[in-house]
Amino acid sequence: MYKLVLSAVLAVSLLVSSAMASESIRLCTEGAYPPYNYVDDNGKLAGFEVDLGNALCKKAGLTCEWVANEWDSIIPNLIAGNYDGILAGMSITDERRKTITFSDEYYPVAPSLYAAAAGNTIDLSALKGKKIGVQGATTQAAFAEKKYGADNTIVSFQSFDQSVADLMAGNIDLLLADGDPLIPVVEGSKGALVYVGDGESIGGGVAIGLRQKDIALADKLNAALTELKNDGTVDALIKKYFDKGPFYTN
Amino acid sequence: MLEFLIAQIGQWLGEDIGASLAYISNGKHLAWYASVRYTLIAAVGGATCAVLFGLLGAALKQSSFLPFKWLGDFYTTIVRGVPDVLFILFFPLAFEKGVEYILAYVKCGAENVAATTGWPPCDAAQWYLSTGDYLVMACVSLGIVYGAFAANVIHGAMMAVSRGQLEAASAYGFTPRQVFWRFKVRQMWAYALPGLSNVWMLLLKATSLLSLLQIADIVQWAGRLGAANYFPRVGLVHPDWRWKYYLVLFLFFILMTMISERFFEALQRRASRGMAITGSN
Image 1: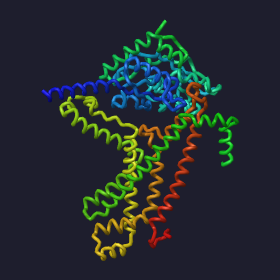
Image 2: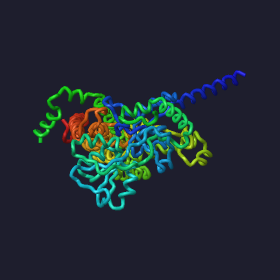
Image 3: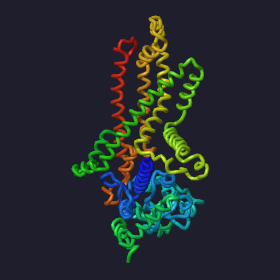
Image 4: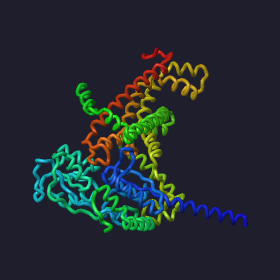
């Protein structure tokens, strides 16, 4: 009898501790894609997605810890289990759906834009023999490869910063990037960079990347996200960081 | 060159030195300075491992038991030929996979491992590597790579120890093991130190590869801080400043070189005490 009680207590305490452990998850972001995510003056991860992720965790009753990971290995390391969710300006695509799953979208992605050095005349309808820069493994990279890959050289960069630096240095003729981080760069270049054409609409909305088997976590985050969309928290954050919207409330 | 540098640093500090000082002492700059600890830990830890692997490798190379000798020769030949970048990428990944493979069999059961296609077969087999774990891996990786160089240096130094000293020790009745440790190893340091100081300098430079292991070291922070910023919300708006930050790293490594040279000079003086070789006092 004594043994039975003891083992029951042990089993319950194990269950409780594993339940408590499952309340804690790790979220990952890149930390180099403002205003989505960046490292602030205090050296901490910050930005739209960090605020949103923290609000989501609070709503869903999860304890969240943030980790930074480079963009090009962000999906493999999710699958390898280094963290449980990605909030890094990642658009929903069919290609990515083959390996991971997505939550509902939390931001409708902005159109992608082309930028080039001022004075470098570029005709988008007849691009030939040009060097077109993109950040590797992005929707823009896949788009540029498909549309211009045959007649031009597509140059992939590890980070958005690097692609801008190479455009400034004249190592590429044209840069195709997400409008949200690109617009402040062009505006801030004091006329050194100009837009080319009207831009492209690429990719679905931005959502949390999750492992395909973590269905319970996806449901939990989606429920919290719906609540935050309805009560205006998501729109308020979008207004704060992107100065746009509202998208999810009237 | 020097005038240019001074002019640039003056321009960088600008009229408003106060604001510049506040900028270079904000949280993310402090995080950058603090990340020097990773470089120093990896260098000292790596060097310790390298000397241990070096001694082991040299001992193997001298062994009269042929398979041991082959093992020692194999180690110094193969590992010296592999680029350190490759090894630092390869070893931690291979080690992690190996441990997870064993964990999978122990914790999940062989039938589960065979049944699942994904990895890991069960959550208990997941090994999450923290920065500290990666740092240990980096030390061991650096130790293995530079231990191969150290093994050759130490092997050569052991050969340089005067035979007369060893024969005299034997004649006094010391056992072969005592002769090895108390005479050969004790005296070889004086011959090995110049070579080992070279290996140390190479190892110190190789610590700049730490960011490959997701460790936020001085090189990664320098790139992050120097990257152009156009968002006032993120911090000071500035163009691409990476060259300034890399210049600071240059100066840091030069300073470390100068300190290391002094240190090895002192070490050499100590190791050469009472020995009839050049460089002793």
